[in-house]
Picture (tube, one colour):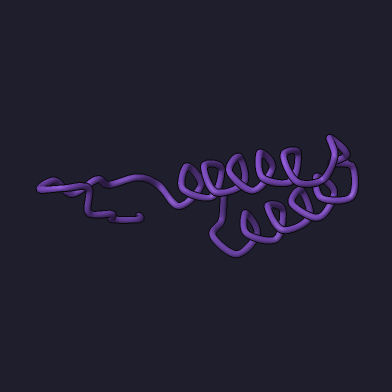
Length: 58
């Protein structure tokens, strides 16, 4: 579980959901600053996501 503070509230999400949100943000930045090319970045992120799932049992 991942806890985040948002204003006066605490948000609780699964580690997988938090990872997915972080990956989406990184992919958006890669598209924005990478000239629309995301193949290498997407492959890197997919590899990291697979490693995280192994580590967190997802």
